[in-house]
Length: 211
Image 1: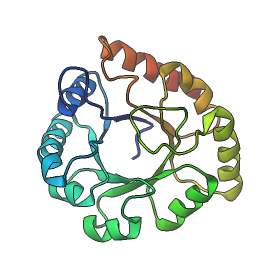
Image 2: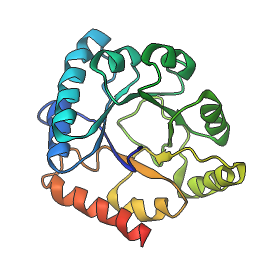
Image 3: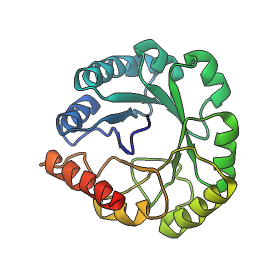
């Protein structure tokens, strides 16, 4: 199952990606994407091992950003690939069929591409400008999600699509109304003093959408 609420790791002001991940897991997070940029795979491996061990202990799922080899090495739930990363069919040869592959998209053409490639879910964005991502693709914004999800529905695509990029808690209800499957957040949880309260508030927005 693809969780509708996903956390993309970000190093907090004090501490590491692992500290941030553990805090989110303690607050009840169930889907973690380890996203460490500008580091060699060998440097990221210890973080991936630690993150996988934490996710296993909390009954959560770990996705490794960018590196299928690391996903295979630590037996994570899967890998997420950007548009400039390794092609999905090549990553599939590395990790096999038992791990999932998510792919980034910015346009409807990208969505079509990801569906054709056999992605298990799509991260669609960015919703707004975010400092956590360099070489940012054009902003999608709320109107963009509405138009894209209408095209997705018309095309008959059933792949889970996750909104990503600078999303805050207050943005979630409006985004979910577009037909988006789920939301990925990063800064909205990292560095929060009361992560449990913030996560509970976010989860309540999902519940309200289902009512």
